[in-house]
Length: 428
Image 1 (cartoon, rainbow, N blue to C red):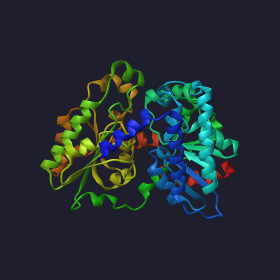
Image 2: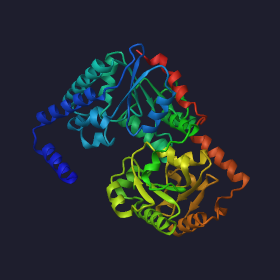
Image 3: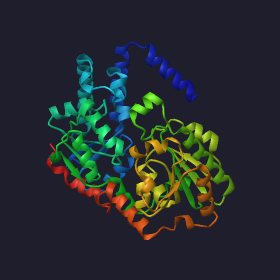
Image 4: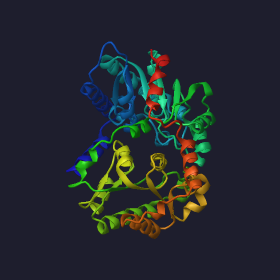
């Protein structure tokens, strides 16, 4: 039934005339706004939060908030009609945004103006928060908000910048979608430097730390309990996009990916679940990973679950006995909270690309698995009660602390408070 519904939607998008599709998307946006039904305290100012895979940061901000109405909006529902107005190259940040046909840009700005008018009618917002302003679908919204003297600020959620992206992604942003919001709040001094390379003046950047890391300082939730018939010690593998952190030109020219290593990792987790029924296992997919249903059909069993989304990642960090992952911020967060961690690193391309990747191979206090067999051996020993692979020397522990501090400024549980306390000067 789901596949039939998707096919009908695709056919409708293909055969319906452009003006009708535009009108349908506009009506869907209006309907979404009307159905939000967020209660609002008239004595407080309202802030719109654009939740683009931003669940954990939204949770942290909501927990710390004492002074504002927070209205969280889903951009996939509010701006789903944006694709009508932009080329694939602009959508993928492969061409300059300002090269969009002026007619279509003007028409899309009109749509954003109508959307914002509806948001104002229901919620009267004073500020917009977004995890980025490079998205093609939000830039005209920022412009029309500014026309109403409503500021937009960014909390950058992509704080773990690889050595390659430190320069290349900064240049791409500067050339294709220059920073246009009033201010950006970042995780670290390293991130501030990268945004400086992207052309953002130092006075428009504030280092506050990572808001979602605040959640690690609070009690554990129990959302994961519903996934298993009984709770047992948990092992989590964080899956990933098969082109994660590969330089864009290599993806295009040589079609490099991590697909084989990722597949082997999934297979090893399944084998662990079969051999060790006394543990529960979770494969946590990346929020934008498209093979969630396939993985569920192939791997799920009583003590192995495949879950998506972004909301439970911190509970996984808090409750897992062992974290297995590749190039991801989760490994840094696991090191922050002292979790045992294995870095999967046996793809043959890793050696050639190592200078472009996050340097987990030298992070200290982390096991680097250079083969799928090593992943199995280390994990199997641990699951059998032998944790010697995770006995680290004092220099390795010191390296871990330095590594974490390089990416996360003051992970003290108060980053969200620092951010919210800084908002007053941006509120209209």
